[in-house]
Image (tube, rainbow, N blue to C red):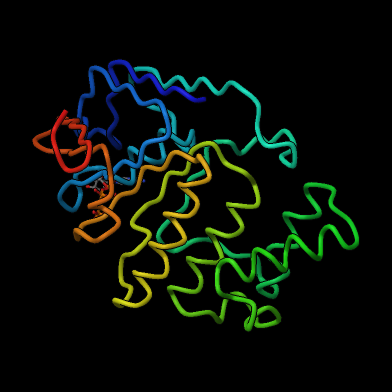
Length: 224
Ligand SMILES: Nc1ncnc2c1ncn2[C@@H]1O[C@H](COP(=O)(O)OP(=O)(O)OP(=O)(O)O)[C@@H](O)[C@H]1O
């Protein structure tokens, strides 16, 4: 179970006026959220603030993460993870990027091998296991970054334009992976300009417009 409470949040850069003022934002459960807004409306900034990667000029952001995780999940400082649209990958092989997380978990021998192999299969990268991660295509890079995040058992994933600049097939592949991760119980907020099958599955919309955040919730396509 997690809960996010945002109060009187405002942020801007240098001496510019605040990008927006968000008096209150409340998020809980395991919903799939679509964050939208024009270019420059502050979507990346908001996601980075929520992830704790920037300090707000004003206001508070409070996460409450409680309850037990699956037995295989160790305590993890990265329960709220942010992924940039061009995710950072370690300069090693595809499998090496996942092995890094396995080592962090303390998995050894067969357990590490099996879990890395299963994740490579799940994200459709088994055939690329020994390829340099940084030579992957855009869609493959995003799938690897999602797989690496998945191994960290996040409670909440904040995805910054995960399908930007991808072709139709890559969007479908990345969307499938995001949906699978969401089905494990991970709450996800993703920013995206273009509507897609994935954004249509979202049950909450956050829209940055005219320096405000509008929130609407949907259930099976109907506003609630
Ligand atoms: N580190 C920074 N220093 C100064 N200004 C910044 C910084 N980061 C973002 N900005 C400015 O803040 C505004 C919002 O940027 P942000 O990247 O959050 O918008 P966005 O909605 O994600 O845009 P896009 O849809 O184009 O990715 C922009 O005007 C941008 O130039």
